[in-house]
Image (cartoon, rainbow, N blue to C red; front, side, top):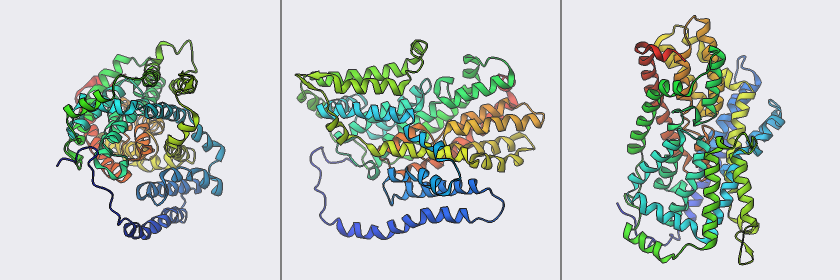
Length: 493
C-alpha cells in the first residue's frame, strides 16, 4: 500500500467529537486503575517491607498510565515525586536529582539545536537528504536506521546515539506529514528501530555505556587483574552477535508499517531539495553547531584529561547557548521566545520520571527484593541457573534501567556462585549481555526514554518490546550456556 503524495492528504474528518466522547469512559477507568493498582499492592498481606510494596505499586501505576495514556506522559513522569512525598518510603531528596540529571541537559540542548533547524528549514533539508540516501521503502528505512544505531552504540553510550539520531528521523517524518508518532505505525517503527538498535549494539565493547563499565569494575574487583579491552571483545562477541542478529530479524519482521513506501520518489525529493536552493548562513550554523556537538561527544576520550567535567551533556549545552549568541544580519539566529515555544518539554519530564522510578526501585530495596526472590532457584547451577539469572536480569533491566540492572544483578551473581564454589565469570558475561537490552518501558534504557519522549506508541513499545526481551533472554541464555560448556576461555577474564 502506498500513501498519497505529500500535500495531497485527505482533510481531517469533521466527526471527531463522538470519538472523543467514546474515549472518555475508558480514559476515566484507566485514570482510576493506575492508583488502584498502587493501593492494592500496598494492602498485600505478608511480610513484604512497606518501601518495597510502594516501589512495586508505583511501578505498576506508572506503567499502566504510560501505556493507556489517561493523562499526558509527562504528567506520569511526576508521580515519583508525589508518591515519595506522600508515603515517605524514600527520601524525596534522593529522587529530586533525577529531574536535573545530566542526560536531561543533553536532551534539552539537543532539542534547542533541532529547534534552530526548524526555524530556518534545515530540518526539511536534512529530511530530504535522508530520504534520498536511504530510499523510500519503509522496511529499508527501518532496517538502515536500526543498523546505524546498532553500530554506533557499540562504541558510544546509547542515550547519546539516540539523542542525536532520533531528531533526524523525526524531522524526516514531519516532512512527509507524520506529526503524531503515537498514531503512526511507521513513525513508531522508525523511532523504535533507533532506540532498540542502541540497546542491541551496546554490549559489543566496554565503550557501549555505563553498564559495561560497571561490569569491568566488578570483574576487576573479583579477579584482582585488569580486564582488557581485547578480552571483553573476544568473550562478548558471540553474545553480541546473537543479540544483534536476533534483533535485526525481529525488527525486520515484527513491524508492519501502514505504508510500504514513503510518499514520493527519489526524483521528487531531489526536485524538492533543488527548490530549497543553496543552504543559507543560519542553516550552515545550525548544521555546524549540531555536528560539532555530536563530534565532541563522540570523541570525548581525546580531551577528557584536559576538561574532565566537560561531558557530552555540557558540550551540547555550551553549543546550545552559542545558538542564542551567533548573529545573522544583526539578529540572533534563534531567540528564546521562539525556542521555548517549539521545544518538547514533555520529553524532559518523561525522561526524568523514568530515571526517578529506576532510582526509587533501587533506593527502596524493590530491585534487590525482586532479585532475592529468584536467587534460591539457581542453587543447582547449570542451565537452570543461567535461565534464572537471565530472567532476573530481564525483569530488572526492563523495569529499572540497564545500568541499575547490572549494578544489582552482577554483584548478586558473583556472591551466589562464589558461595556455591562455582566460577561466576560466565554468568557475569551472560547477565551483562542481557542487561544491556532494554526494550519495554521508558525506564529500560536511554534509547527507549528518548523514543518515548518523542511520542512513540508506548503500547507498541511495551508489547513488541516484551517479545523482543523474551527472544533475547532465550537466545543469550542458550548461547551463553553452550559457550560455558564447550569454550574454556569463556570462563576466564
